[in-house]
Length: 394
Image (cartoon, rainbow, N blue to C red):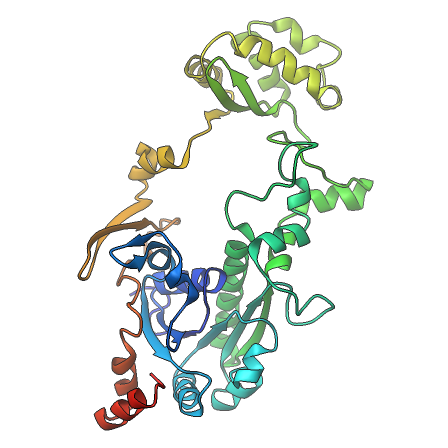
């Protein structure tokens, strides 16, 4: 048995933040019912790349879910959702604030059908405040949280983080607050409302930057691969590409100079002798280190750094990561059979739990795949189901 076996989740989310959250709930054993809008379903189904006619992106974040297609703009469709809610523990939506209320599926409405429901809303800026009605795309949130202002090279064009960090961050924030709420429910029987914002979720990760601002009035700027408080700690050019290295302690700095660079005098150079002086002269530090590193290939330097006990590593391309032996050993790429299509791949489960590991139980649903099965579990007859189809409710 998995930790969330027996927990029913109603998922009316779309694209990424919400589906990522509910995917992990499903990985941990929850029965997730993904309710997609009639007739076209989750908009991510139309996003390439396609594999035998299905969106690969959709399959990646909707595993371990049952699929239902339902017209929530019709009274009959909402009545079906209300019946589902009566049987549920958790409800997750990521509409723009106010949309759920207009559809009649907001928290105040649904708690009439299930007073102990855990209801989670995910939006760009949260449910209240002067920015609440603004659009919540990941790239917009990266700008609004300040994270984009400190990403990239100094003096360069604005650069976003290479992955949709705010979508994923909001999904994870929703996830652990749903779990915290479920623990509260186990203790008290009470459900509650959870308001998650893309901007808030990743703003909360800027703990070091907040410390620098509140403590010293520093406004963080782009530093490329450099660290704000440690030097050397960045990417360096070699003869055939870049490597990463960090020497965060005095002992490591001394070993870097003597055992790797062959320049023990650098360790006592007044420009570089202390952490503070290295940060003050970081441009000169980078130049002096690279003057040595560009003389030999990156493979040579990575071996030398390893021997000296200096944290270091290559900068892999994404395809190299997915083929790497460490990735394979950790089972972070899994292969499965998609019905009617054949073998497909997905990312594995990031935490390795000894008693209750994440499990792959079913691939992402085809559009409306389990609608009739779910309706029959709610005591709908074949005749009623046929009538709902005829009325374009399902």
